[in-house]
Length: 533
Ligand code: GLN
Image (cartoon, rainbow, N blue to C red; front, side, top):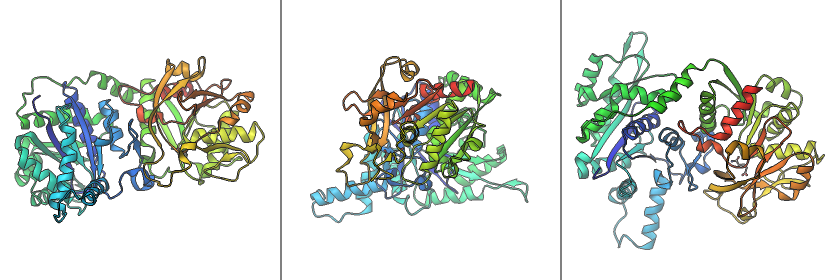
């Protein structure tokens, strides 16, 4: 296509309506018609990136190959579209202001007063257009975080208004709202949607398409009513009813014609249908699996399931492809003790020890690792989870009772996990961990070499501490092997116990790489082992 087409996705009425899933679903449908698509997220908060945010504030921090700490919606984009995203795919207000202020200090504005309009809005527009201008994409879908009417999102909506004014037919605006069912009246109510669209119109943006999130079917009459009040075509009012799995949303959106309406808006002929065969195969398996596989996810942020989003989605992908229904239980690591580990964990087919930071719940992860090791339970440790596995082995097989990570106990006499040399002089907390994709060389004949069917793999990282290589030989003597290292720095990346049915800890985050069409080999192998159990 000649010019990149820009699609903006805004949200109204309430947060958490699934803008990210709608944006990813539309991206999928356009991609499945043969177009090149990328998804972008603009986050209206002042943090530079979500890397410094507590998962309870924000959910998981997703890491891209180029080492950017991003919003979890980028995980949805990658899982749905099966293409990688990068730094330019996630922008925050913090970064917008930082860029503008840095330029002000350099003197770039030549004595002008620096203002939200035009300087902040120009910087927002530059960040949107920059991805489009690469010429790589037919469609760019930009999702604006937050809800229309928020003070924070005003400069973004204003930027969209300007872009629409400048580019006209090259843009399309989709607004996602909520249509609640009021039980006492026995009716769906459209007033919140009307108000939300009014708000958007007041800010100068007329949506082209409305997506109505709802629990009940939206009748033609309701669509017509919404269309009339909101100034859109009745065909452009799309029902987005609750479904059991997010992976059904693209199919529902296809049935409702979201992609068709968008193409029509751009004047693009609707001549090829989306090829969703592979997606449907996955969905069929996901929905029709009857036998269960029970996995315990041991972590400290279990009150908010979004905190482990990529892990739970990776487990869903792997389970579906193995014709199993995933029964995932989130277990608060603080609750696990030496005495109750058996009682808490024995009913599961596999144990996943989650990533994390800091002391809270760490001992519980060590108890979980011990239980899994001693009882031949398939166990996958990710990042801090792998580090807890190492601490457990040092304490209970090597007899180093005070073995620890220097993150938790700097004065330990057995620092089996220690700060990476490259981290020792780092003072700033933001964006300063070892981040992004690095190579890992797998040991021939190891379990992981068999699982990956490769000798060099690339996985994404987010950590400051590492396995202390001084202990590698002692670990080998008690049967715990370092089976993956970084070929340049020799940094130990994988720990496994060859004599155990399935006991693998990885310093990296495989969960960032599992997608619907490419389930991750490590999760696949873990689920297979759990099924055997
Ligand atoms: N806190 C550990 C480190 O910094 C592990 C980090 C993680 O699990 N992502 O090394």
